[in-house]
Image 1 (cartoon, helix red, strand yellow):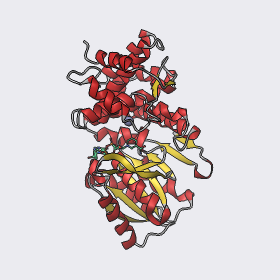
Image 2 (cartoon, protein in one colour):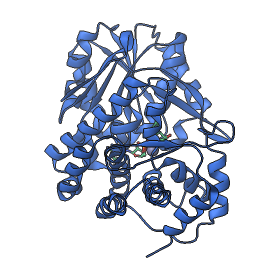
Image 3 (spheres, helix red, strand yellow):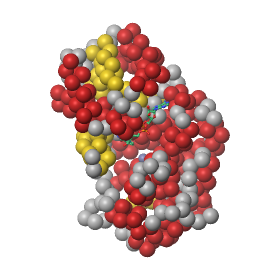
Image 4 (cartoon, rainbow, N blue to C red):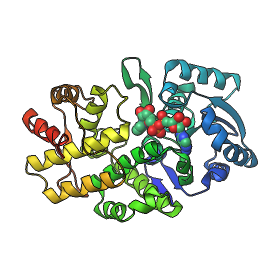
Length: 362
Ligand SMILES: NC(=O)c1ccc[n+]([C@@H]2O[C@H](COP(=O)([O-])OP(=O)(O)OC[C@H]3O[C@@H](n4cnc5c(N)ncnc54)[C@H](O)[C@@H]3O)[C@@H](O)[C@H]2O)c1
Ligand SMILES: [Zn+2]
């Protein structure tokens, strides 16, 4: 499956194809890039998937310099970015060269930040290997490192020249990470596409069994939905981009008050979806059946839909500090029906408290 992302001169293609890791060189050649590449990855991913990628690049006539970064969020620091710049200088890479990110969203974010800043911007290619990175982080051009006081605080928009998704890589993901990525997939269905959501409902067993054909269809479908949002709003300036934030206003607050260690991002988003679904019902926007379908799908893929011990007051405080807040008002995207969205700006704290209390229920 090839998904065009139409952004004028910054247009690119998302290739979603089982086994495509070994064809990266073939996909890069027609883009007219320089012959030098830097392959940024963590040691574990490089050992598992670096071989076919490097071989296909060399066969297609590209040179490859390896740049290792730490695994996970600890890659997203200024020190790691700086070490990457050093490696690019040492290898004499110029603006025609290409930085390739092979790994999860953290590798993609720091490698993208390095590509955006080195010589004021060089070519960048994403080869995401987690569900979350394939359907979310690799698409949209957001790059970032963390500030000691806030995640993703330093960064820029820098669109990739190509996103190459090999759905077979997610077969090696630990179960918890795999299910967490499904939260973003379910999010896309709820606010953007009723037929896609119904396909997810029918495909639960095949998804959880990581059936290759199902992964290709579901991951590819989600990439296409995110791409359609990016095309309409490449720099996050309009309401449509808020759709990608469904479940995240409450989800981010849950992550913050639980110290980022009780739940994975996807688990917190699943709880956020449940709370925001109930919020839509409380304000008369959505019918009970719409809420029930969202909860049932999340539960069926093994994501949490209930939680105890959260302090609603602290969640409300954390929501007020949301990055999307404008003049003290936090826009919340809600789903009036499966496949549709509405952004609301003035939900009262009592309504939010009420919705949060449903998370405690049976
Ligand atoms: N730029 C964006 O638009 C955007 C969007 C969403 C999230 N993000 C960022 O993405 C990051 C989270 O990404 P993530 O969930 O992919 O986790 P991650 O990048 O932190 O990776 C988690 C772990 O999974 C391992 N891993 C990666 N692929 C694997 C595979 N196929 N098999 C086995 N292990 C594998 C990694 O080595 C790492 O140890 C966060 O930093 C977040 O801020 C960015
Ligand atoms: Zn998310």
